[in-house]
Image (tube, rainbow over all chains, first blue to last red):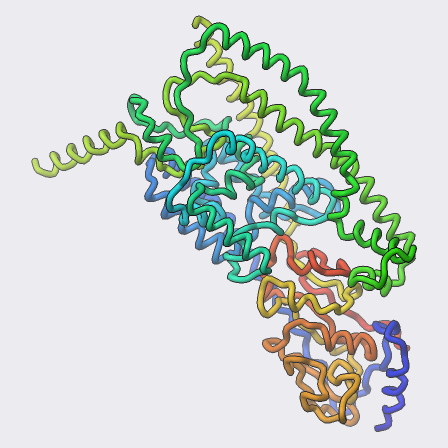
Length: 432
Length: 189
């Protein structure tokens, strides 16, 4: 009871006096010891290395199964394993898709050191892609695996729709890298469609996005991978350089079109008609015109991006907060938000906040200019790509778009004929 | 078409050169990352100095209940009998019934130590990280109760959902070998 005055004092003290010590440390006479503060540690570091080892093994296995064994069934089983391990067991983090942003942040912010495992997760699938194409997409990525599993009846996406939609990943990559670079947010992780599924919980918006994407994935082959995934955009850039590619038919292509029908990802390109003189000359003229226009496009894109920097900068919470505080100070906004209230509690002068926001806007301005130029570059190169004639005599898998699912091997009649021959030979050996 | 075969080889050569350059770049990057061994995994934590006890840790986490829990830094605690982390501001009496206590899940255990001191313990499985007790302790007490991300529960999402929502930008990345931010006693007043 002798401490009662303290409580009364505490009640009349303003709330702002919090965090100051209101009560002196107790003088225990009974030999009471402070209980230790419980600090449960994160999982041991060794598990991170196990994740990395699993990544390496699954990447190599996917490349082997897709390009040497040519077995869709084995690839599907490996995809199921990856879905279980990286998806449901590891809850989808860390993944190479999201690691892209950690790399961007580490390059921009010297205060953030790129963790070893995150760097390795980002780089390994790209290295494999240089050798064997998108083996990561085939059966390692849990996001791809979950869409692969639910694909029931693939519809063909018409080329006029597929071509522009296929550019979205490049734009998404640009925006996500810019937002990570400026330390605003990790956009790719925030809008990861299947993370709520892997964690069996999440916000309503995340669950709705995931369910919608899964529903779409039953009739459209891997919509996230083809039309959104920013890491897929990187792999699409790197995979055309790959050493080993999908060779659909083991012998001669009979041009039956069965493989192109079987591919749900529109990755198989038919043979081209023989080039004719006039079309070739026209194509050359168009290419020259496009190459001349490209610098103009880049300049225009950069300028538009620069103009839009103020809008994009608002993704950063400090910029939004500074704008809100300014509005409140000028009397244009009534009341406070949770964020502005939190800022007032810190007792910092408004000018500090405004200066921080101005510094961020100054970082965004060149960033959005580069982003605009990047968007223009992607568009320009796409147009150039459309006017460059590639000569194909057989049905070929486009290494940039091919996800190494193995469906074309199953569809190819020449592969089937060879398989039958092998079974017969094996049966004949068994009989004799 | 006489130019067909040489064109193929030129393209092949370009591809091989680019592939070699890419492999060199990526393996160089990987080597650089691997050789810098000290850059360890980062985990999320709440900076208690920035936290404003808005209560969103309880609702924004991808886990239910949240990976954020209240912790008690005993060395800072006043061991008050009338603890405002434990009791509501307005209450019928000083009993420990539900009508008097602040915690909505009855996660704070009170134990008599010696006159006039009482020890308060967080029953972590019950705690939902709503910060109601933290707010009381911050306002009237020593700030010995505060929120921390519990790393036996945290999934360590690459972008923490609570960090995105946190109005005070109190979520920071800390090295996994030092995953907690300990509050210490300020100069006694």
